[in-house]
Structure formats: C-alpha cells, structure tokens
Image (cartoon, rainbow, N blue to C red; front, side, top):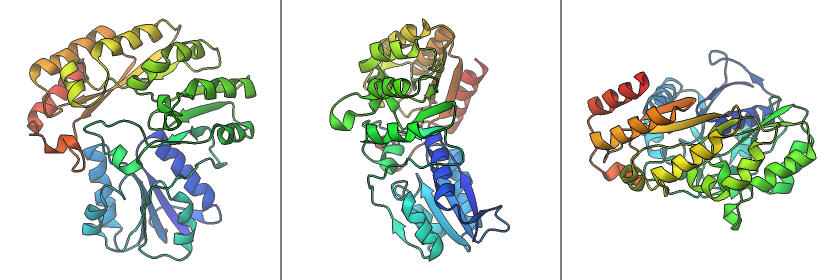
Amino acid sequence: MNIALFTFGCYANKDNSDIIRAILREHNFTDEQEADIIILNTCAVKASTKSKIYNLIEKYKNKRLIITGCFPIPLKNEIRGISKDAALVSSHNLFSIPQIVKNFFPVELLEQRKEIKLVQCESNNIIQISEGCQGDCSFCITKVAKGKLFSYPMDKILDYVKNLSCDIIHITSQDNAAFGLDSGRYLLPDLINSILELKPNLKIKIGMMNPINLIKIQDEMFKIYENRNIIKFLHIPMQSGSNKILRDMNRHYTKEEFIGLYKKFRKINGINIVTDVIVGYPTETEEDFLETYNLIKILKFDVLNISKFTSHKQTEAFRLKQLRSEVIKERSKRLSIL
C-alpha cells in the first residue's frame, strides 16, 4: 500500500506523524501522485493553515482519505460538507489507523481515549509527555480537539527515554508545565530531574510552557535550566501585553507576573526566550495593542511568533464582535516591523 502523509502544526503533531509512519512501517510512504491512501495530520489553530487543509480535503475527496490531528473533533461537520467518505480519526486514536488502512471505510473514531504515544520511531528525539491541557482560553480550539489533560505515566516516559540512542531530546505537549496536574501535582521538575539522573549526558530541550503553570514551578525550573544539559531555550507565550485582554482571553496571569518570569529566566546565561502574541483579539483596542507593542519593545524577545486572531466556532471568543480584518493586518504589520 502506498501512503502519502501531510503534516501541519506543532512538534506534537510532527511526533504523531513519526508515530503513524512507525505503526505503518510495512507500507510504502510516497508522494500523493502514487498514493493509494492520503493521510492529513491537521492543525486548526491558524486560519491560513485551515484553508490549506480544506483545499487538500477538496483535492483528495475522491481518494481514500484519512484525516487526523486537530480537525476531526471540532470540524467534523465542515469536513463532511466536503468529503462524506473520509475516515476521521482524532489524535487519541492513532493506533487504530493500521486497521483503517487495511480495510478502508469512512469510520469516525472521535472518542478522547487515554492513548500513550511513546513509540520508537525513525526520528525519535521528540517526546510527548501528555495530551490536552488544563486551560480554558477563550480563543483556543486546541482544547476542543485535544480534550482535558492526560499526563503519561512517568515510569513509561523514563522507560522510553532509557531505550533511546539519540543525544538530544525535545520534550513537547500542549503545555509542558502542566504535566502531572491531572493528578493534582506539578511533576515536570521531577520528570526532568529523573531524566537527567537516568542519562547524565543527554541534552534536553523543553518546549512550550504556559506562564500560569510555569509561575507555580519557576524556582524548580530555574535550577533545572542552570544545568549544562538543558538547552537554553524557553518558550512562554505572552499572547498580550494588556491585562484587560489577558483577562478576556482567560489566561489567568497578569502582565506583571509575565514580566517577572521573563526577568527571572533572562538571568540564565545564553538563554533564548521565545514568545507568542495574538493580534486583534475581538476586545483589543488601539490602547491595548500599544501596551503589547511597547512591552515587546522593552523586553526584546529572541523570537516573536505573531498570529492574527482567528475566530473558531466552538470557542467563547467566537460570540464576540470581531475586529475588521484591515485593523488586524495593520497591527500585525506594525509588530512585524518592530
């Protein structure tokens, strides 16, 4: 069987695609012209990405098409408006894909199961430690797609790491700092320290951590980042420099708390600090935008990811009056120039 696999989105999605290749290793991965089956591993965060994926669904609707990732749960009706015969598989059901490939039919596997995605892959330096998140951000469709937080058992993660042959690993999830919260404890520091004990020469890159949870473990994580084996990379999404907008977004931290985090970790020698900003949230005024603009000007992040606000039907922010697209584009352009 010839399979073409398209991947969109975050490191977790890239790892999921590696897992799909691993569990379908008896098949041949090729380009779409020669493919018997097309697999789309989707991301629903940005409007531009969604548009590309919808175009691919339209293009391949008459082929055997499997759609996984973030689309199947929140965008099922939209998919069915284009393709009635695609198989829809949520990111919680990846291990069912081989059976679908073997006996293709337009199944819908959308149950949010607790599936532990620790599979030896050809490219096995990305390690997911959990699925879903604890947040309630008013704009985020990822929570709809991924569900509530499910932290993988620490012993299984450590067993997986023990058998790796790579020199560097990348820890990823929707929010690494939330690891363990579904059991009532912040366990990321324990996990990282256990990995460092298990493999003293292993380099570790820690992916995105939401400020609200990193604030709670900042002292432990600061000590961890001082370790020579921790790659000096910190991804903390600010999203806005206005306390009003942060409240409207349900981010549950203040601008001042974020600045405190930034200043604390900036003391680490050689650290690169990455942040994300959403421009054009429906309640964002020019004054709110200027608060964000001026804060970025002061803090001088090493990398700034700018996203134009995208409205998603299943979110709280969808019900708000949206800003004009020209306003959003103009503000985004000003930040890009900065």
